[in-house]
Each structure stands twice: as C-alpha cells, then as structure tokens.
Length: 353
Image (cartoon, rainbow, N blue to C red; front, side):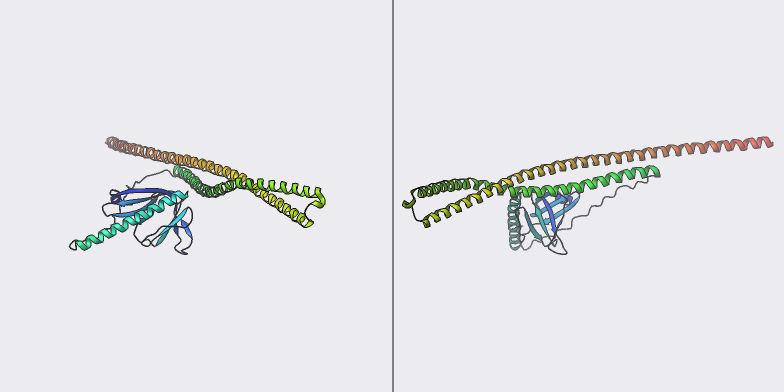
C-alpha cells in the first residue's frame, strides 16, 4: 500500500489466515504466500469509492486486490475459501483457523462486492446525467526511492571477519528457528483440525450412547423374558408350544445376544476414541509448548543479533576515532620533523662558516 493511499483508505474488517496463491504453471496446486497466518483486511477509499483486500507480510504486500462486482468468494472446505483476481491473473486462497472465521470473511466479501456494485452503478448514472464532466484516469502511484548515505569505513580485517562470522552464525540460527516455527505452526494447524473433527465425532457418539443404553436395557429385558418363557415351556413339557415354536424362540434369543455383543463392541470402540482424543489434546499441548519455546529462542537470537550489530557499530566508531587521532599525531610528527630538518640545515650552514 502506498503512502498517499494510506491517508484516505480506512480498514473496515480484518481477519487472520494462511495465504496461498495458485501455481501459475499447473493452475492446480497451491503455493504458500506466507510462512504463517497473517492479517487480511478490507480497506475502503472514500475519495475514489473503491474497496480493496490487502495483506502485508513483513515489508512485502502479499495481497493487493481491488474488489469488483464480478468477483465471487467460494468456500471449498470448512476452513478454506478462494477467489480469482483477473487483473493480477491469479487465484488467492485463504486457510482459516475456524469455520466461523471463514463464514465471517465470506459474508464481508459478499457485502463489499455488493457495495462495489452499487458504487459502479452510481458512477455510471452520474456519467449519463452529466456528460460534460470528464473523469481523469487514476495516476500510477509514485515510486518512492530512499537512498541512504554512503559511508566509507576503514575496517580492520581480523575484527571484521570475527564480527561477520558471529553475525552470520546467529542469522543462520534465527533462520533455522523460523523454519522450525513454521513447521510447528503447520503441525499445530493440523492437530487443531483433527481435534475439531474428533470432538464433533465424540459429541455425536455421546448423543447416541444414551439411546444405545436404553436399547441395550430393552434388549436385556426382552432376553430375560424370553429365557423365563422358555424355562416355563420346558417345565410344563407337553402343555407348552411345539418344538418349532421353541426353535424360533431360541433363534430370537441368539439374535438378541449377538446384537448385545455388537453394541458392546461399539461402546468399546467409542471408549478407545475417547482415549485417542485425550492423546491428541496432549500432542496439541506439546506442540503449543514447543512453538512458544521456539518463539522465545527466536526472540533471544534477535536480541543477540541486535547486540552484535551494536557492538560492531561501536567498534567501527572507536576505530574511526583512533584513526583520526593517529592521523593528527602523524601530522604533528611531520611538523616536528620539518622543524628538526630546518634546524639541521641551519647548523650545517653555521659550521661551514
């Protein structure tokens, strides 16, 4: 975003998401545009009546897209959505942490698109009603170029090598820590998604457990009743039903027992899933803990880099000061030598006389 736009553009909605762009070669695969979740915002320019979607990662604009009435935001999964930007000839994808965040962004996108359509219609009506007015084409934003002063420093080779080696080593450690942090965030994102799915399955299973318990109790009562009825029939002997009826009752009893066994297995599977859910929560907590430790290590490395750079700057300043004093001493020594030479020549002339 350019400085003169920032003065008149105002943010109207923000959310955090992982940003992706479609692979221009295959038009199928997604390429991550950010190492971690970044802020994605809708901006409104009241002066030009224009809406834009902007996301900045560090000092680089990841998304800079003007919203047009022809755009549409599509939900491709519970936490992922995408839209096409014909001006940039690309497709943007956003991965959110929750389904609610995706829904909020989708609703805001639809609202902004409708507002952009109304703005275009008003602009067209204004052109038809006032044909004498001409609308100047938007100028290209100025390119700002900042040239810092060029400092010519005379450095000691051994000190420079030592400080540069330490600085490169710390930067390498910081880069490795950033990669580790990115991997941990991806792992945490995957664990949270799996956790959400498992929680939904457990809630559904828990809702069915009570119903299954009631069915099991009814089956057990029916089984007991059939057993008592079968025992009475066997006790009465000839006064009971025929052997065919007894076989049918025995078969029904076996079927009920098999159904009871199947329900017991389902309950056992649900109990195992509950244990897996607790294990998943433990893994998620460990991932969060490792992510926090990595962030702390990165902060410590950044602090060490700042200290190293400050030490390097102080060393250079001290070296410049010493060189200045040495140069001044050399000038004074040159004057003294010149005076001594002049005195020597005077003495030689005096001796010759």
